[in-house]
Image (cartoon, rainbow, N blue to C red; front, side, top):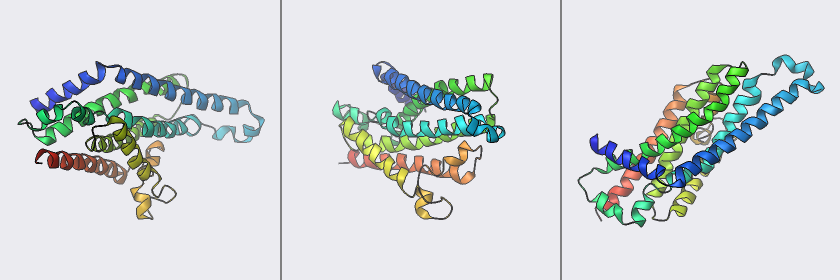
Length: 250
């Protein structure tokens, strides 16, 4: 565990000793803030729109602000997570520090887990900071907090899945841009794969990574969705370990 935390601390220091983490945080907060403002403004406008007067009692913050906001943030993550994960191993390869790291007595699984947890920590900071928007909404409005909390759990599991694939993509190349493109390509395939199908009635629909997110935004936490995201993350980490193990013994 000491080795794992040492590498984790090194990775976090690497993130925050360069402008990368701060740029990622600022861009994510600006984008999420803009979309949150647009959805909230649309909800307020609909309160005074004559076309919505008959349905005024059905207008609520969860359906008109929280769910669309969480859905949009998931799309933003699809674009930003590859940027967070692209350097994790590709940078080690480019700087030739991977040879020292992988020939050391440290187990590959410790390297993989520490790098994944470092990226996951940065991602968790992003989510916590973006939750300020919904905290303000809770103070001045009356959203149902259940779907808000389950939606953020869904975002966390979705982001962890994205990061595991990003880490795998970073283990395939020494070029960070190539790693980001590979990561985005794989995630996009799993995003659109069976996206028009139901997760319960087709294999492709079950494999689609976004189909399992919708329930979280409704305040429903189903075991099958949690298991899917945990399995997806473990599979990405497993592929990374296999890739690094194969390089270690060449």
